[in-house]
Image (tube, each protein chain N blue to C red):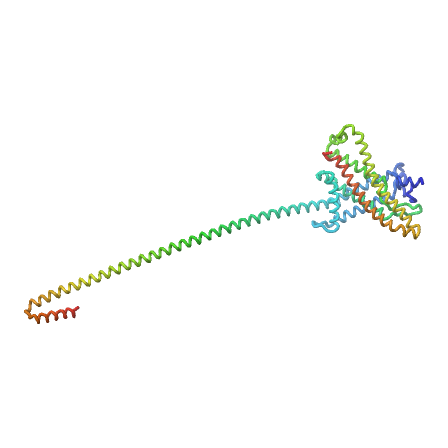
Length: 173
Length: 245
């Protein structure tokens, strides 16, 4: 019973200084070796992964900002282009209207001018014709008068003669 | 000295030095436990990849687990220093505890007990506890300077000095003996159950179910004790190295 109690209290070997020293050496050796061969590389890998992930997040953030910026620029560009197109169309429409009016105006002026000049020409021709007629009538009158004067004629003859001359005049014309 | 009817394979007065006694079974089991931990550690960190899989995943979980223990006691800036210590302590103690759960093996004419948990020996657990407490003092001086370190003994009131000094020794004792007691008790019961199982056919039938249950419980205890040891290690370290204590 004595042995049983003793073994329960202190265990198989009690406090052996040799065991203690051995444990100390083993543990410190294990600590150093594991640090070199296991924990060190593993912790480095975990650190590297952390850095990698942080880096990736940063990069993603940056690209997102870049994309947003570019999108904004593109939409601004689009808006500007649309405005430009609008103003160009507006200009073209204005110019076209102007040209239309100009052409109509010039056509009308031209027509007017032609009309006026035609009328003038007609008038001139008529004046000329009237002038010519007048001249001839005068000449014929002189001839008739001279004939009447040359010959003493009966009323009958005279009439006949006048008719003759008138005919003649009509023929000559 | 025996353990029930088991003898310890002693090597007394080694090399002719009168105070140097070895329990060869302890030395052997320490070596085996250290070897297993080392092989596991190295095996887990071969072929490391940025995307961990398999064993590496488990090791990283273990690191996070120990990180959590440290993080609950001190800030990570100083706690980082103690991560390898915590990892090694945890792995070594857990593997040691498990070695005794698997089986106890005695051989030879005197039934010398060769295979057991190294942590079922008070000398070994007290050595680990002493190492931890000495380390806590070392890092207390190193990280905070001798003056600040000395002040921790007279805070918050100077008359607490004797209690503070006693506390250091009681911490060492409780830290070591808690681990030893739990593991040793587990092994005693396993030994008793094995004894019962080998006594007769009825004993074997009767002992099987309690044996399975107790081995499961011992595994749990082994894990919990390793966890507690590391947790208390970090508590003692943080008392010495943290500013706010």
